[in-house]
Image 1: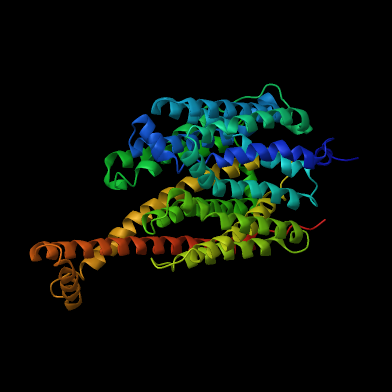
Image 2: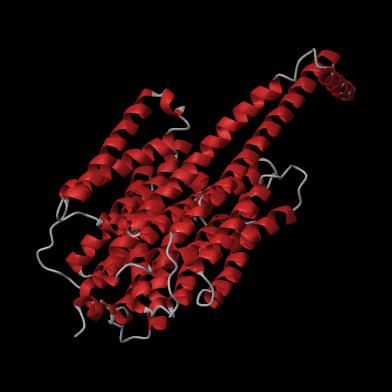
Length: 517
């Protein structure tokens, strides 16, 4: 006689899972797309609202905070409403909030709408991942997760390009309005096609972990505030940053303590006893941090150092998308034939190598010097991300999927925020360090510097007085010094993130090999 777990694991949807995946992927794509599509339009929004750059950053971060708060509570809300119903509610809330974002006339209403959008979007990704994992057999799962991974990887890459094109050719509200028809279609198709397995249906007498939810909210809000404002406030040299970070740390400890001690906890941390899940989650967090950091640092390098426009800098990310699509096809073909750990290892190696190649750039590069590493970085993302998703949950039971994917997406969300903040800080600090080192060479005791000033002043002397030419020559050389210092800051940052990818490869050795069926 089969056990209860065996009965649960034998559940199969009556609808063809390849048809069921359509509304799931549609909702995933618009949710992930919205995480980056507004980046290039931020200055235009700030201008419309008469807001400062720092104030406008909350348009992006309020979305991440709200999504991060909801993600761990997905399992709870799925039990209260039924997972399918909560998924549809999430899509509709995200769609309505998108319309409100486009209609916003001031910064306060925009932040409110983005918070609402984050609340709606927070449930989409973990539920989508759980639906795909449960609806397909283990033989079909690699191909299905390749489709899922394509949406997760391609959407952040397409976001800046699409956002730049829409902003230049229409107006920024349309980056939100385009979500409305696709969101409505996703909700309708989800109602008709998606089914709940027995363990994901509505349950009675479900209790909410109020304390855990409160601690989680305080932790994420304060953490995001520190990550957002820390660099501008000179980090821990600012008293309020120290206090905010202390509150965040205390709330974090209290949250995890409450999850370990409360019977009706918000999330079930027992999944971390599975070493595949633990190691796989760490690797995914690092990949997510590198992905989002590169989406910030590379366009910034091209715009500030190479003079690219916002649209062109976003367009340089397209080879990464082509590399990801090729990798998805390779993954779907190879995952049932060779050890997935080897595929992930190859992917991490490609990401790390491509990032290290970016660490060799200079100001005399061509477009191919950007396109080729981007292509291989996209291949690495595709080869690493999809198999590691499978490896991290393949040893868990189906009824653990919603909780496990919720935890993973929470930590990946934090990884994205940390990666983005860390790269901003690294650029600032490394530029200061290199500038300090180079300034020591701009001395009257340095013959090379004096010769350069004199030759530059001589070239300018035909257009102005000798004294003015001297000042202009020194100012010109100082501008070159600052530019070279900033270039070295980019180089160091790329190299560190590249090394980080290689550093997590040994974690694959801790993971058990999943038997092929």
